[in-house]
Amino acid sequence: MKKVLKLIVIGLALSFSSCLTKDRAASMEFAKAPLFGMVYDFDNQPCSGALIVLDDEEGPQTDINGRFVIGYLPSGEHKVQVKKEGYEELTANFKFSSKNQVLYLKLISFTQLLRKTEYALEKKRLPTFQQVYCL
Image 1: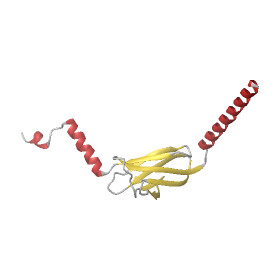
Image 2: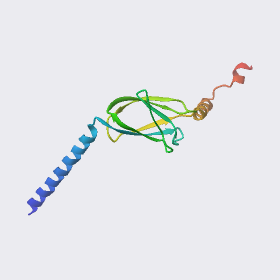
Image 3: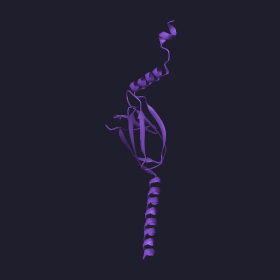
Image 4: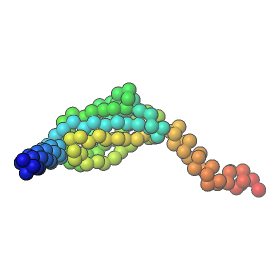
């Protein structure tokens, strides 16, 4: 009785693990699938209304939560650009390799860039204009 129970448990475990392996392989191999993505700024706030350009073709704009979907994108290498007024344009290459892949993109606004630059200058304690040129 114990041997039969062990065989049943082992059989179920093998069946279950083979199903998992099959599902993983199926999710990795695909010709086309929708690509989901999110665009945030450097304060981790969503960027709504950002234009997504994929492989030099205009795509969707992000929604109020910074999310976008590109339908039926072929697997492989792609170039994405993100454009939004008041932000530095982002260009990046990525490999679309899984049906479950989510693309996270981070934009920096000119205000955030100025803040980060001022902070870096303060930390390095660089001399001011008056200190250098006004002896």
